[in-house]
Image (cartoon, rainbow, N blue to C red; front, side, top):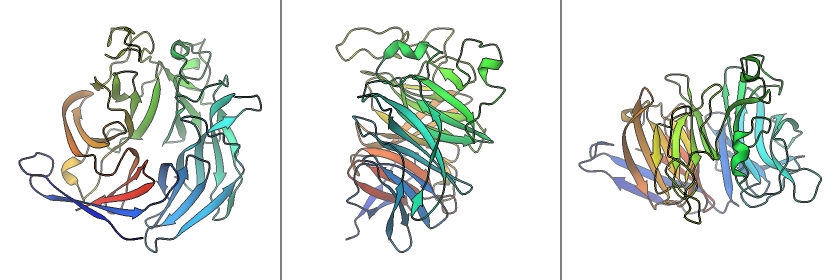
Length: 354
């Protein structure tokens, strides 16, 4: 593959103060890549939404397919979605076909890393399964001994206000799939399902653990407007679909107020929508000016944005680049170099460095 480089210059900007950013296309011709995770300094594992799982060596540029036994149904926004490597294990989220016509769920499975074939075991299934190709959420984050999962509301709106159902919530389970005994159900939320950590979300497709304050941050798609960036909070409610977060239904009809007391308030809202996707809290040497800031990707305007915030209060937003590599589906930091790796809906993996 012929290498393609893009050079971005920022003058009179507080982002890099005139320094140069470089973008290098590492690999192309992928089939709807959705997520990547670093296995080590040289290797990543990534998913294709159509159901395939691969490893890729950043040094020798070789790609290897890993067979698996997941019952994935690619339907609308569903498919093989987030992947996370942790201490020899692979955690993966996907839209699982539930043996009834059209019914799928946001499911999460765990398996031991193997270079040729991984046998997975489900550790979470969002109940009830729903006949919809919308809003799977599906991001995964590990904090301590717990796995956090974003479960989208599958286009069902007010289901996000029903804590007896998983869709429209943030899930918290142990790494083996068992239920933590300090989840909200056991701390005053008796009517909640035991796996639920927070309710009232629509379609959170970004989530990351901050290495600075140990909080979990996430991004969530609104409807016609109302995307947001905020924190995952124990036992709280983001308000969908009582609240519209500043957006409207696609028909133009009003949903509800942007925010009101009694509900979790986001750090940053976007009206109109930018279709927020993946995110990370930056820590590294390559772009050390950004340490502690959120880097958020967009599908709609194909941008990478830097959000500066403090104590859950928004400070500023800057667009690092826009319309350069397509719709950005995932972003990860190389822990050793601080360089950024991004997957685009064009079927490409990009490296961003200086």
